[in-house]
Length: 190
Length: 177
Image (spheres, chains in turn blue, red):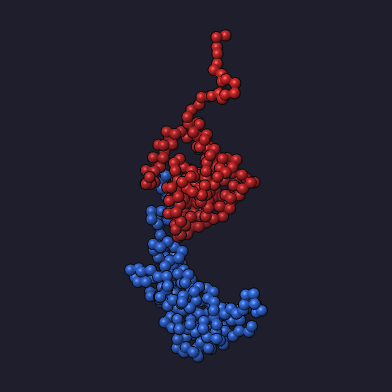
């Protein structure tokens, strides 16, 4: 099955959403479309539902810490998977697209798209847990003093900080267990 | 010659005298029931140790006890994350005295290559450890060697000293009974 080229997909998105698309980068190893954070649910529903798009699979959400620009970036890799299991048409991936959303490091909020792609549920929890990007409206949120946050997925629930941030400071102890990142740490004697 | 030794009547057992410590330690060292706490690749080598080629049951350990209440040897095989630390500690606390533990492999003993924010840097920061088995992962021979060293340790203990050590250990670890 022939799919749309990345240029074509980018044109359709720009024509449909205008100012809500911040730009397209096509001459890259990872062609992508930049979307404004507040327009993301609307664009996501279009990408999933429009008959020309049919991006029915969210492969991955990556989070990037751009410390020098003081921004976080979330990268959504979308696939259009067509076919049938045990049917006459084999599965194929006619087209794919990447969406990048950039948010300021001081206030990193992106609307959740877990209702559009169920795969986003755990990916958004991981991106919050390890990078601290807040996905507003996530279905598995917990109340914190700062507001609603997605539940952590890898670190313990009471963990402090977001370990994959470039300015993350390693903890020196966790509930009395000495945490060591250098040689020469003394240990308790049993 | 006026000397008569007590002899057992035909068909009945005789007796011999020994120290209580020897009997107790003999029983303890030859009936260790391991609680396998396998979290990573070391657990594969532990399974190999229990399988027919290396045959852990030669040492009286054929019963891997998956319940800590019926085990007396904790074999921690693999890395332990901070999220897992309370689980390991609770299993150790649930085991009955007398109990021993083996830290199997580099990660359990020192954190190994996981010099990371998320990883316990040696389970001796959580529970007391009797024998450290080095290796990444250790071969079954190494685990068996560690078990035999633990048997030596048990053999050379006395009940009185054992109780004293246990009390001291609990006081140091701040353990709740």
